[in-house]
Every structure is written in C-alpha cells, then in structure tokens.
Image 1 (cartoon, rainbow, N blue to C red):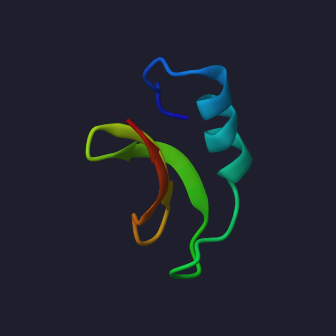
Image 2: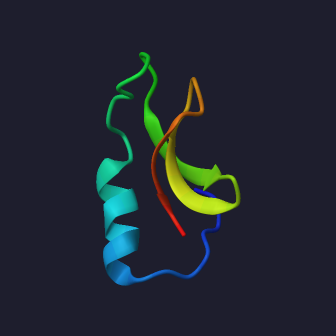
Length: 54
C-alpha cells in the first residue's frame, strides 16, 4: 500500500472500507492510491477514482 498523507481517522477508514470493492465503471478492483495529488481509492484497471480526500 502506498504511503498516504496524514488525514483524519474517519477518512482513512473510508479508504480502507472501499479497498477491494469492484469498480462501478469496469471489471477492476479498487485500491488505495493517489489521484491528482490526493489520497484516494482508485480502480486498478481504469484508474477512475471512487473517492479522494482533499
């Protein structure tokens, strides 16, 4: 898992909860990562973000 910036416990829990779910845009799996410089949960296949934290 990539090193994520400091954020609230609740925000981190949201990322963890969503990780491993199916992408709603393709057949990929959601993983924690970065999207446009923000901590996020993105699809491993299409790189579409599901959630990002500013």
